[in-house]
Length: 75
Image (tube, rainbow, N blue to C red):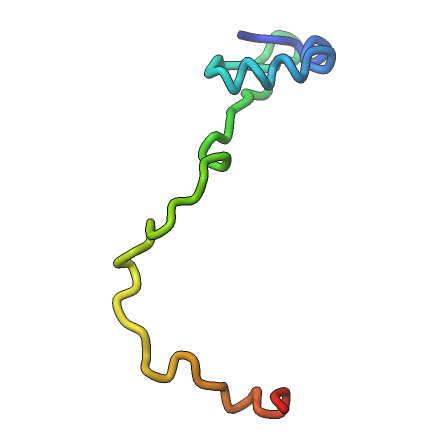
């Protein structure tokens, strides 16, 4: 669905709702497509624990040792 800028300003919350429902919303200026609204549903999904399992191949044995140049900060 296409809406000109002034219509989009007046009905912005409705346009967002339409986008979240899966409808394509295009905002136009002088009858030329200018902006397409897109839902970012992947940002709203919950994180899944363990989804990165297996990506770390190895960890150095001194991984959690203090760094020499930070000794002045540690007291």
